[in-house]
Length: 608
Image 1 (cartoon, one colour):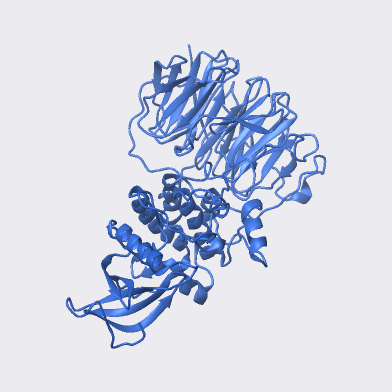
Image 2 (image 1 turned 90 degrees about the horizontal axis):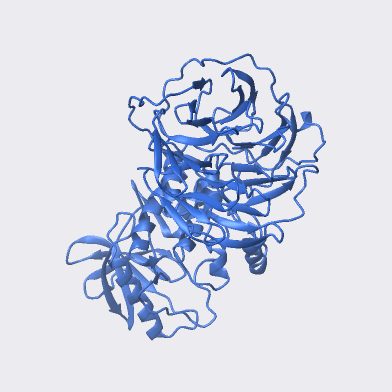
């Protein structure tokens, strides 16, 4: 194919060479029959493959791509043979590749990258639904054509119902964008494309890939064993990237989770008009915001770039709350209240807000005892130590902070995460603190501030929620159980493809509750039997057992709180919130149920 006057297939005239990749050259051509521009892809002979194998691979590419009809996937018009080799004729897109844009601009704004990523993901989901995995997703294979973002080159796509044709020992794909399991020669799945999407978006927003090395061996080692380099420019997109770059494919963010998170970055929900805070007392104690101001009693180290995560609530129509009795409404937060925790003696409630504050409330009076300006981005998690002397908070700046409950004094900070901290939990004896972000789960020695003696093996992936069993022998991270005597994963309770936002052990440790999307499953730890609680119409965000273990509370994005008995029968529906419910918690004596969420209030509902 070496002349601009040459005809391919008797009707396609080659005009100019416009690109060259690992599988072939692409020419701009002209369809003489339909009088339209086309792209003609010529296969290259390499990798020790025979002409027959190359022909079969190209035909497979054409058949696979032709099955897809999506604006984000290049359209295949024809497959022809020229000079004893096949060529694919496709729609011609005049826009530059993402790689060419990055070569010129180095990096793009986070919102723009999120928008590109959302379009790519939509196209990938279409391909995955048809059983097609791209296998070589990278900036070179993404075209920005006007308003369209188009994925090209399914030349090494793995079609589920086709025979894999690969030369012996050949590595299919571009190593810097390949998932760890792909490098190790495991089966290539849809999750590999999600990893490659994460690397592509990381490169687009940061200007460099998340993993690098001076040699191919060192690059492989970095991808297989090291954490991604911390983000500097990603902002709210950083959390999305962390979810995609989880090494365990079973714990990697799903397409559904990623789609919602990307949309939250480039199309954030409109803010409601701010109202004056009600019931806010004078600040009795304000935490210092720098590491230097914290005494070195715990030896915690501060690491990681600041990351402000995007809000994840979806606007919902307002409705009049039902007539459920509410003992008290706690108002004062100016943004979503995403986590709540009672002190062990039941006198205090701690609330964590996206307004970057932690608030402590007197349960008897409903008044704020203390407001702490945490200055670490969103406060996403909060938990009291078993003796009530300390409380821990997880933040959007990837840090976990430890405070004294009596005066709100900051005594330590721990890092080693690259995305916001979703959950924190103290062990029953108070010696260990578990912290979880989307990319990893860590255990810390509370006394020394160093990693705990027992570490979770196999590079434990991230989680949205963590919980210790009452005897401290097990740790639940989403729906995976870990044996804390050995650090080994003990049991996997669900396949990881649906969102798990919250886990909780029953007080006797026999049952683990976890949401799976909009339903909740109760797993019997001993027998493995399950009970399904199905009643919410939207995702469940929080689960909590009553102190006597007879009742489970669930809070959902359908704006309701529901109470269930352990047999799975609904007891009561509480509709006191006007927006998504993000957190529920029972008071230690079981007389109150606290709930909080996107309406920026905490509701205390009396229980029989």
